[in-house]
Every structure is written in C-alpha cells, then in structure tokens.
Image 1 (cartoon, rainbow, N blue to C red):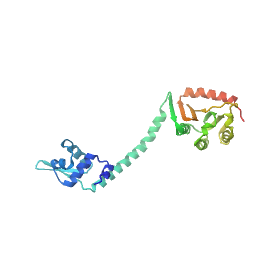
Image 2 (cartoon, rainbow, N blue to C red):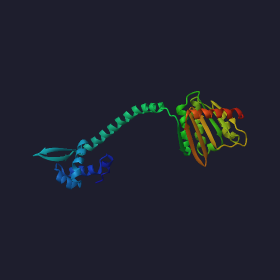
Image 3 (cartoon, helix red, strand yellow):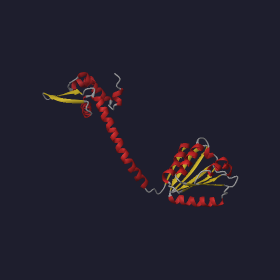
Image 4 (cartoon, helix red, strand yellow):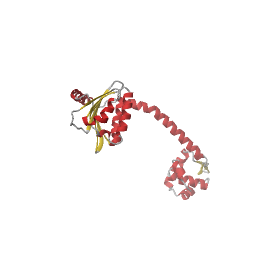
Length: 253
C-alpha cells in the first residue's frame, strides 16, 4: 500500500504502522498489535495515545484488559478538515499579530546597524527601504553615479523605482559622473521631484552613495554587486553635509 497520503496528512511512520495494523486486526489487545505493526512494546502505548488524540484510535476495557480498535478510515478525511481549519485559524491569528509586530519593529531605536546586501537583488532590497521609511517631501541624495549602476537589469529596475519614488512625492538629488550624462543623467532630469547635477569631467566613481533619513547606503555594480547599508543618524547627518558641499560645486548642466 502507498502510505504517502498518510505521511502527507502528518502521521509519523510509527503512527502509520500502528494504524494500519489496527485496521488489519480490528479490535485487539496490545500483544498482537505489537507483532503486526513491528513497533516495540515500549513505544506502542505512546503511539496509541497520539492516534487517540487525533481521533484515529480508541479503546475499551473488557475483564480488566484493554482492547484497541481503529476509527473508521473515513475519519482520516475528518482529521484532514480539522487540520485545515486549524491552519486557517492560525493564519487569521498571524494576520492579526503581524501589524503589531511591524509597529514594534518600527518603534525600536537602533543606535547603529550595518548590513551588507549581495548581488543585484541585494542592491534592489537596499534601495526599496527608502520607500518604506520616507514620506512626501523628504529628500534623498544619490551621489557619484557612473554608468555601471545601470548594467544588466538595473536600468529597468531604477526606472520603475523612481516612478514609485516620485509617485510618493519623495524628492531626489542626483550627482552624476559627467560621462553618464547621456542617457542616464538626461533621463533623470525628466522625473518629477528630481534635480540633476554633474561632477567634473574625468572623475569616475563606480561606487555611489545614497543618503536619506537616518541611513547611508554605499553601492557598487561593477564586477561584484553589493550594497553596504549603515543606519545611524549621526553618520547620515555627516554624509548630508558632504552631499551639500559636493552639490554646491557640481555643474547644473
């Protein structure tokens, strides 16, 4: 017999052996059950107790001797439905507590954290954080943009990201390498809530900085792609001062 449906139902190998033995024997004492199932005497009563709690076995006492018998096989479907109902209730309970956990997480005061995100997906994960914590009218800086951030799938992603960014009314100041003016700098000038300036010709910085709220992200997409995210208000404030200085000496067009 293929016992996989019983395994998928959540029965252990021992429970399956004992239940099948019960079905084969009908009403029986523990001795024949041990022999038929191949389960040791030391474990048989524990397994019978678990099956009873699942509604798959029961016992009666005759002349001071316990006799065990299986539930009707149709009970297996009832057990499945009970599990599904329990899972649905667990899901509902999780839906209730997740917003509370999110509030608790967001209320935590983090003095200093630093995380590294690997790969292009990591670059995206680090960038997506801006949309979660920034509000309409907030300003983010992206400083030292070369062409390399847009390699591979990143150009499509950054276009989509900025559409969502300015859709929320978040402002952005871009400081590009001069050689990235065409087409990337020019594309960025078309975005609402966006300002673009350029570094002096000849300066190429494949690593860029994103500065916003209490966070500084250093990203690179040349050779190995990764982001280093530093969450610390004093660090962010310091980098904003550097950003203001670079912005003041950058070329507008």
